[in-house]
Image 1 (tube, one colour):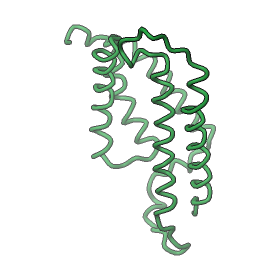
Image 2 (cartoon, one colour; image 1 turned 90 degrees about the horizontal axis):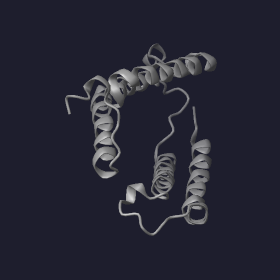
Image 3 (cartoon, one colour; image 1 turned 180 degrees about the vertical axis):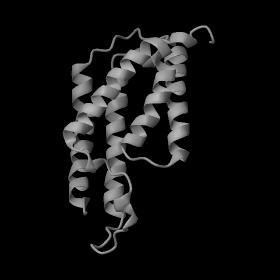
Image 4 (tube, one colour; image 1 turned 90 degrees about the vertical axis):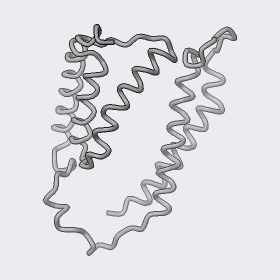
Length: 169
């Protein structure tokens, strides 16, 4: 299926929204006191980070939509039909499964802590949404929660709950 026009429109739209946020909305809507010593604690840090993330990911989508070849109608691989496809599940069921997983994550978070819970949730969600490359799943599922924990602990000075692992660190 050719999604190139949709991808192009989506990429351009979100680049424009991200630029509008960076150039207009954040500067005019977020009041920043002059006495913030840690940049991560500044009120405009996360809005700018998210806006630049939207711009960057949209730029990648734009490059991908412009650069990748679109296969013809008869070049589909038959083995792809036999593999897991998220779109085969009804939308309501996907939403229910995702909501249940997030509520379960919230419950487990209080017992195992944010790092261990995230290390379990991330590969489950990656597999649920169709990622099959374990070279991506395992490192990302371990490094991202640990990296975010260390960032919040050391850079932002915000301790995160570790649950039963509190005494180990």
